[in-house]
Length: 476
Image 1 (tube, helix red, strand yellow):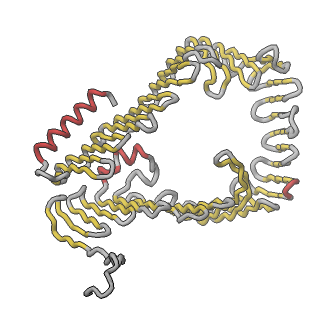
Image 2: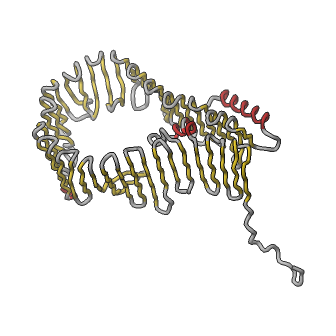
Image 3: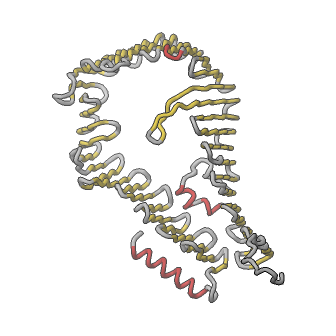
């Protein structure tokens, strides 16, 4: 956050504090108009004004403030990161040590990348204008659509060039350069460089086209999409051969899987020899029955599905075998999934798509975490350390449970909020008009944060220390 803005915010907060805080107190309670509090350890200073509209939260290495739903700012000194949102997601800005990103309604984008060799900037006014700064591994790029463009690592292509699009277009990917005149109708292909495998091809779409990369792959089509023949991965241990004469016949062959389809998509048969798996689709994807050593499926959509499979996933730089299950009844009425790893599991239940969701996560030697959402009434979150957060209403959170949503919007419609952490709990109704607080030693009910309606202090437990020993013969 700019220094001038931060100083102005601190100045306003200081004036309010000095003018309103009673002597010797570290809090001002005039909710929902104004609430200011400083707590230790930290220390931490929080300010709320006009209900949930204005907020300010300053703690060591972290400052967060804003005016909901207009804008919010977050600065984390420990992570050297910053965030700014204006009518999120209309305009967003993110900063981190390796670079920064800015976007305006996803049409205007700007980003910087920092590396030990230097920094570069990219920006784009989609879909008309784009610029890519030079990097050690790439030359600069520029595009003014549809007149001219030359970009690198864009839209899945190693290099993309065009002139008076669609009059001329050139794409480079997988060491093959494809050139088009009046894309996608006329084109030819060649090796992208002298070091790349030899390649040749041409096309007159949709009548006929072919591409051959010697020793790597062969692709051909005729009267697209009626006929196609692909031979891929010829230089690997798992080459693939796929033929389609639609809608009569289609097949795919590889060492791992063989599939055959007649009258696509009515009848299909899939075989995986290594796991003794066989599946019939009648037709795909409505009716599927299959079984094998590490997979089974019984699927009649939308009435019922019962499926499990073993799969390999990458977590924290290591690979794990995970058992994944899925059960569906009268979709979208009920759907439940589970992922079970060696020392963890995650269960998710959905009723009427995202109307009701219940997600449980459990790791070995830890308590369970849980998240429940009932749209648009409430969300409930419980972390492994026992902390609980409840909120109502929740019109967006069941679908987008992200930090910017929680920071910019959630407090605006949170008629009731409950928080519990350790021995302390707090219930706030109508943006703090009614508030209940409970700690290990006291309970209190307040109106407007200021007027105590009821309070109770709990007596401290008796000490088990017998004190210093008395001399022999001393009076008790």
